[in-house]
Length: 192
Image (cartoon, rainbow, N blue to C red; front, side, top):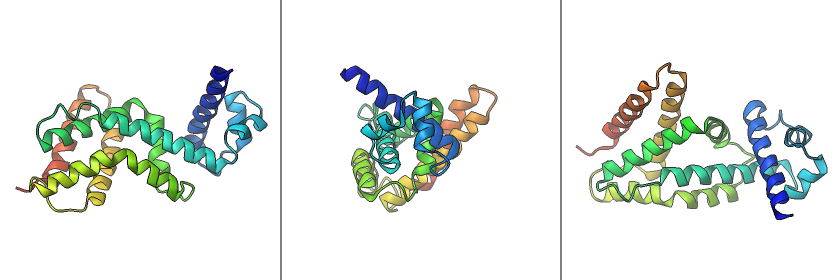
């Protein structure tokens, strides 16, 4: 029974991701999500009492996956620059490999439907990034910009690079875009 519950909830979330990304929040009804998931509309409400609850759960889930991916293998890096480069590379590769999720995060990161509570809970997943940026400032390696501004610029630049990679005809360009994008970010941050 538990597997069936997980499967239905997963089906709902995957269907919501697809439809919210394609049609937006207002353009997606719970009936459409239910139909796409292959369940009755009433079943959806057993898992998510409102569409707002569903989008917040989905946002938390996807942002958590992104955070996990960004943080992979950074402890193996020795310098601030290498750690930041690894996070950048992980972020871009996750965006390329998870295009629908990356698009969803971009569409809904400033949405009024994502609650303050969800945003605060999501930010707990990114403490490592705030700590790293603040460490770079404290040690003088990075310019003294606010961590929030630095992270926002980092993320927005990643969206440009992911889009360029998606639009590129050659897989060879992927690594060049990743490295060149990081170089641009680094030149803006480095305290030379």
